[in-house]
Length: 309
Image 1: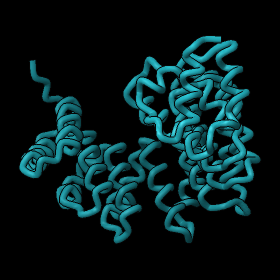
Image 2: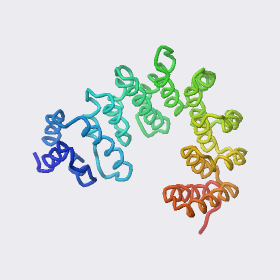
Image 3: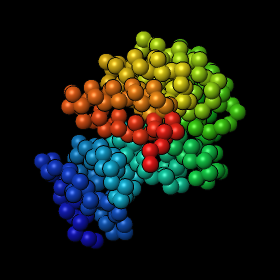
Image 4: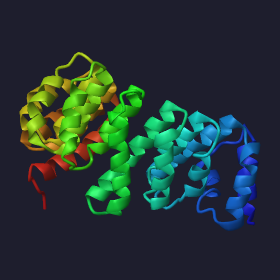
């Protein structure tokens, strides 16, 4: 047993100690006795600290791909606290191993918390996509596909779980997916309809373009957000006049997704809109938006074929 695990446990038990990236480093790549020590002492760490740990793991994992927190996230996925299990599923997004898929399948099937089940089926969408792209065992990915279809078709389940299943299954080309999307789009619940629009974008099928263009003008921000995303996924050039309005959207999330979508569509007009927004972001001192626009402009240049040498 190493000194680093004891230092990590000391920090975790102290509610006043900051969970810095340096502190989290001691929980990376845990093996053997260190892993067993964490498992033994997990219950002695205050619940709020365990929750905070999972959120910090998710943050650090987005920027530091050299750190492996799989021992921590897999342990947290067995915790009695539903909020912590959900956070652990979301923090484990970099774990694309068969073992992780085998952990997610029962969580999506039988966990007593609807929010945990929804998070787990969403995470299985990643494995469905990897299987579709030939980057993951197709037979294992098929298990995730079958479960997503079964969950979506079970109308007794919570809508949040079913709509996440629809989003997950949209990552594959099985023939029944089109009918599921059409069915979801007719649903009485706006959240399900929004997930259907999300799924339309994931199919990369131009048959959905008219619906996406219509929903770009929806009064509800959630539907506009998903329609903007789908417009980018489908590279709908005819959406540019609508996106020109939405890039000035008061809703921050819709506006930021519009920036991303313009980058995906590309071309001269998309770049012009992005540059105008970049000037505005610079005047406002909005560094986060400026960075997002810079990334979108780089993508737009490639999408539009405007290569600079």
